Length: 200
Length: 98
Image (cartoon, rainbow over the protein chains, first blue to last red):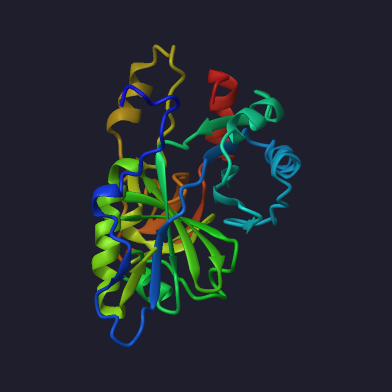
C-alpha cells in the first residue's frame, strides 16, 4: 500500500463483480452487464436563459452536438452527453480531466460545473433482453420510438436515483450513486438471471 | 396514476412529491401584516373540485411543477413548470438570488 504512487480507481462493485456467464444461460446469454468506468462524469447546469450557451460550450469542449428537446443526447467516440432536467446535462468521457476543461469554458455567468466522477458508478446493460430487464426496474417506456438512441432519462428505482442513456438499439448506460451501486448491481444480476447474463 | 411532467413526459405518481397548496401568496419577508401571514400559514380553500397545487418531480428531473388536480376525481388537467409564473418573477425581484 505504501508503494502506491497515484490514487488507484477502485470499483464499489468489486466484491460482487463476477465475470462469466450466470443464471439461465443454457440457451445463450440475452444480456451482458459491464461497468464502463469512465474517467469523467460531470453535471452541467445552465442558469435560466443561458441554455444555448451551455450547449455551445459542450459542443466546443467535447465535439458532441446536443439535439434540442427534453432528454436529448448523443454518445460517440468514448464521450456521451444527455439532458436529464431543464437546462441540466450529464457529460461523460472515458478520459479524466473533463472538469478542468469545462471550468475554463463554462463561466459563472453561464452556469455551473459539478464533478461527479467519483460520485457515480456507470453500469452498461446490452443485449436483446436489455429492455425487458430494465422494464422490471423502472416505470418508463423503453421502446425505441419512445426512448431513442442517445436520449437520456432520469428516474428512480426504490428511491435510488438513476440516470439512463440509450447508447444503442439494445444498449443502455445507467448512472447510479456510487454508494448504492453495489446494491443496484446485485439487484440487476438477480433480475437478469431468468434471461441468462454474462458479466464482462 | 400517471402525472405528465412537462420535461419527462408521463411518469408514475411515486416519482412525485406534493409541495402544498398553489394558491398561497407569501407576504414579503419584512411584512408586518399579521393577517397576511396568518392567511399564508393557515387559510386553505379545500375545494371539492379543481385545485391549484405545487408538486416536485423529485424522482425524476427534480423541477417544481404547478398542477391543477381535481380533488374529487384525481384528474390532473394541467401541469407546467412552477418557474416562470408570476410568483417566481416576484421572487427574482425580491430575493435576487433564485
